[in-house]
Image (cartoon, rainbow, N blue to C red; front, side, top):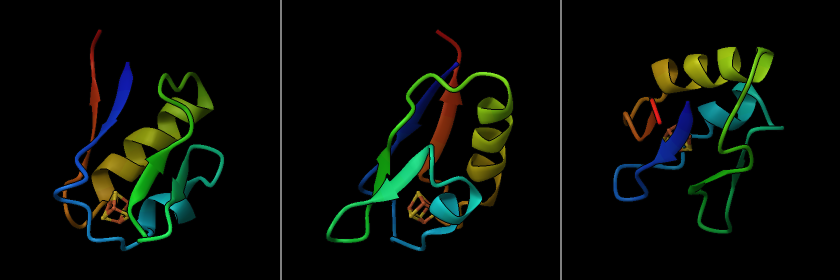
Length: 64
Ligand code: SF4
């Protein structure tokens, strides 16, 4: 699975970073930065959670 972001949708709410700061960060404008593009195991579970809770629907996990 590959983790993707849509910067045009991100509103900088930071829920993803609070879900797992190993996987997500925010840039100086507060927009999401993905630190782990191919999460596995527990990281994949955390990525799924972040996709689910993002209020702007700016994250997605896609099959490769
Ligand atoms: S991706 Fe979603 S949860 Fe993460 S900073 Fe952007 S809007 Fe917030």
